[in-house]
Amino acid sequence: IMDKSEAITSVEDAIRKLVQLSSKEKIWTQEMLLQVNDQSLRLLDIESQVGPSSCRRDVSPQEELENFPLPTVQRSQTVLNQLRYPSVLLLVCQDSEQSKPDVHFFHCDEVEAELVHEDIESALADCRLGKKMRPQTLKRHQEKIRQRQSILPPPQGPAPIPFQHRSRDSPQAKNRVGPQVPLSEPGRAHCEGLGEQPPCPPSEEEEPRAVLAQKIEKETQILNCALDDIEWFVARLQKAAEAFKQLNQRKKGKKKGKKGPAHMVPPMPEGVLTLRARPPSEGEFVDCFQKIKLAINLLAKLQKHIQNPSAAELVHFLFGPLDLIVNTCGGPDIACSVSCPLLSRDAVDFLRGHLVPKEMSLWESLGESWMRPRSEWPREPQVPLYVPKFHSGWEPPVDVLQEAPWEVEGLASAPIEVRAPAAPIPTPAPTPPLPRKQQSGSELEELMNKFHSMNQRRGEDS
Image (spheres, rainbow, N blue to C red):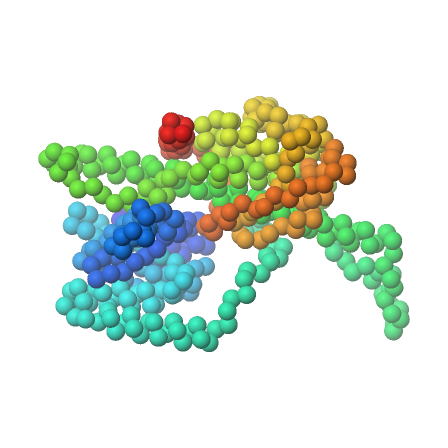
């Protein structure tokens, strides 16, 4: 919103604010579809379905979040190469009931911002001046897209994500770890200064060290990906709580300002705020709890190899989000149901030796599936191998997971069942640092109540 109290009085101020937030990695994105027609700009929820769309051609398969009639669109422009998002569209909208205009930013993914901007400008010209510019604009855009598709080679799919060495100044570096064992070339140390002699074969001692270093690097990468996803989930909870609070304030404002009987007020579209205020599904909570258990296992396994921060420091930092997530879903019931992955004996001993009393109380409340190590767990029914599905799209090496102590302890040579990865999770927004425990405020309590009531309704429906 353009507001002097927020130091935003112009489009330039809004762009400057966005660049500032981008540099601090504090931008939150919500995936949606922007649809342009001859009457309005529509924002559609790409994940929802409004009835069987195959039955009626005039019904969109997506739920409408917002509808901006063309007369309310005051300005459209592109913001290129100023952010980590290279192709951004800016819209300034204000209807007759608004005292201050809203500024909206869209990262254009499939169709670049320039084409969307030209399409909107042609629709605005047709609306304001009675021209027929849009058909020609769309035809020109289709030609551009066809030419581009004929030149560009087909995509080869996402490449594996290499281990990311973050700088110490980046926000994520504070809560991420790097392998401490150097990856040297086997045999090189004993062959330096020998002129033209061929390299010496690796010794029996050096080969295991190189293999160990590679394994530690892979396990560290899995740990960092798990921490990234936990961060993203906590950020999503915070954003949902903020949106829920804003939604309540907006509803209270409408009640105070409306006139006449309630049935005279037309229903408002659900809106972007309501979409953001939706709590995660139970399956998404389970996914996060699984990644927290995986992170605990890896911290215990890597505790001798990581530092700055150490494994002990990271486990304290991990229990803050765990406490918040358990409270948000109304108590420990969902977490207690998460048996896969189990904890290793080292992980259980690691927690017993490092948790403070409050953290210990939380851990004990989660039950046997969090406190009983794999070596003491019954063989039947068998707990399947846990293969995490990360938001980044990177797939962890299954062989590293198959050999992990939390998967093989107490099983002797019994075969391990590989569980198929879960369905893909939407691409995350940039993740701010993990919040500490004191950051769960009243708005999060409102979100907890909302999620709890939704679970109760699900139980009644079933």
